Picture 1 (cartoon, one colour):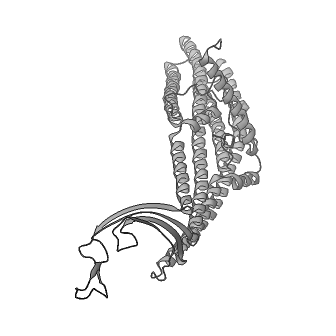
Picture 2: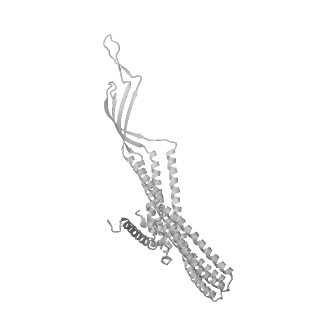
Length: 463
């Protein structure tokens, strides 16, 4: 027995596993300058949330069931290579039977007739039929389902990546909520200091009650914002738990440390190349096109003769000897050919229809490739703009802090009004909240860049 207990050991192993996955994802996703943010100690890592999504999400389980269905269909089509065995039994009653008159008879006797059958006929048989040539229909159908299986695997990967992106967006929204709450807490602290000074001035008859009331109202407004953020955070946590398919998060989402955020970006051409190589949707469409090609060939099979070989063993009464009403066993072997010579061009029209579908899918694949490249470009430009906005907003926050400091000093000296200090505090709070918003948007767009470039979730490919 472990000295700390089995549960403690399991928790420790889970934390170690989550940390290892987080560092693995950080190294992998860094190729596009997009690494998932790491939380503080004891918090729920984003990589751990992704692992829980892959393990518990019902949508992924549905996709896995669809893949199993396709694999079963593959075994069904493979059975077309194998012979079929059929057992049959029959009984029939014939009201009249044939009679055969003998050409000779004893002198003075009437002509002799014998029956050439029986009223009751019994037949038991076991037949084996083997396709010899079917216009390569079976091979094309097997290849088609093979391609569909690969396409479904990639479709499952695309759904998985989309879920990981959604979970990551929720994760960063929760962290942004925490940043806003911390920002409002700082604003409330500044307002408290302002309110204390205003009250002191009021008690010294150096200001009016209106100024005190204005600052108190500002504090109530900030507290109301904090309460709204707390409820919004609980709603986001509930949505994240729903995405992970758990009743409650095993650990709280840690606060975001903006100083750890990396603002580097790889060139856009690099991200576009990654998208062309890694997006599962593109590879999925390639296999869908391949499957449709095999479907076209399978539809062409009725244009060729269908040849089957068969052998059957019969036990019947009567058997081949109709003159003796006795049980008899015998074999029947042979070849069968069937060729639909004219069907009013139905088969050819089916082939043409399938070829048109293949053409449509090919155009869809081309459009999808263009759309994905455009997605990469748009997200990349958003990140470029955000990086510039963050630099500007950082300078603005520094200036607003200096303005607030100067206004505080001049207010204490009686050279500024309470309204001036309130306006400076309000501007500083707005600048800080905007900077926090830009940092969170950077992480969200960076996560989206990983998604559109096809690198999101590669470290979890084994699950």
